[in-house]
Image (cartoon, rainbow, N blue to C red):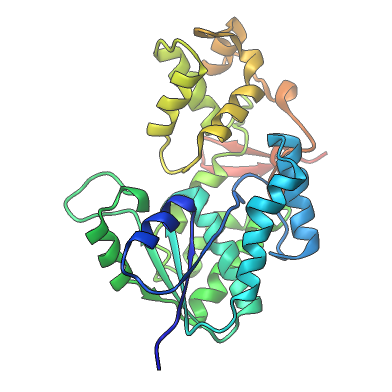
Length: 314
């Protein structure tokens, strides 16, 4: 009897690559960016999708039709795939992918209990310094990654589900030590992704987070003719966030008062003072509606001297 496979990929480009290979199986594309905006632990529930649509509509002007056509229809397709012998996950090393990955595993734990689940993850390549995304691999490398996929144990699935629950909780503090509970897990990039996530809470020094400070720093050190050039640079120098251009344009919109111009790109006097920690921008950028997972972004401060989060008591 033929061994049937279901592949769940991190995006449309990976799906297109797999379709060109000789790898058998059905393919589902996970079209979400759960590293951004509010999340709830019950992946796939009506409440979960309502929270996600509200965020995407408010922050990215996503219409209901686009949300249904692009994300929900593919999710419903996933729900209908129940008969496969093995489910293969294709996710990369960055924050964007790692958060989506643990969410999908949490869903599988709940709705596909007992199924064989394996993981293909990209990042380190022998002999190379940089980390590679799935889209950067050759066809031969993709095939090798597939052949070397790791079967997840029940403990691995429980651990990923646990991390997802912590990510969706109203406090990010337990995430600071969560990676220590499973040092031999196959999720070799999850620790660095969690650290990148924690750095997205505002710094105690100037009220902007690591990513926002990095945008100001790059804008100040280079001459960009427009936003497109700045975003292009950010995409190729973004550490392990894995963001797309729309996320950086959205971030620039949030920071626009710290710029005098985007054509060309120039910081304002306040922007330069914030960058040099001469003034704290927390009170001006703070929002009660900004979430990272289940936690309010501005209810916590990142203390750079200790690399720890501090809860703000109201």
